[in-house]
Length: 115
Length: 113
Image (cartoon, rainbow over all chains, first blue to last red; front, side, top):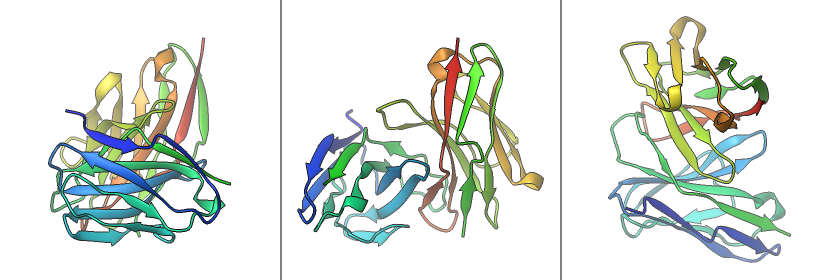
């Protein structure tokens, strides 16, 4: 199994451009999420989804859109990139439980630079 | 709101020395606690977790952590550090009422020969 696959691994954008970070998992996990990692701030939750058609905001959702049309895919969209969105982005998934006892499986990350 | 504090931004230890990484959490109920490790250029991997029961939990790669409710702490320990342990370590708490996992800022471990 591939686990959680993120593409692209690296991307450079100009301010105002749009792009989509792709995330796919082959483990039939219901829960998927996006985090951004910035130096000294750890990982901050952007958006998450508990199943197809269901999404919700995390700690830092502004400037990002998500959708979940299938169990496998959870793309993250930047509609108008800003330099503040320069970061490393991680997608993570897990089998949904009724509690917070969820062990996350992470992708390898996507490094985004906005000039 | 739940939060996680890792007081040490970075720690340097000698190979073969013992290690303790500190983690304090803020959460009203019994927390679900995790330690993840991130090697350079990689995603995060679970080291160990605490859900309930024995407060001393064992993980992979010889790591252990102890949950102390009175101190709101979940410190990570290893008796003898190897050079391959050099990485960034993240403490995290799971939201029992939902599906969010909140991470600390991380502690970067350097291992010197």
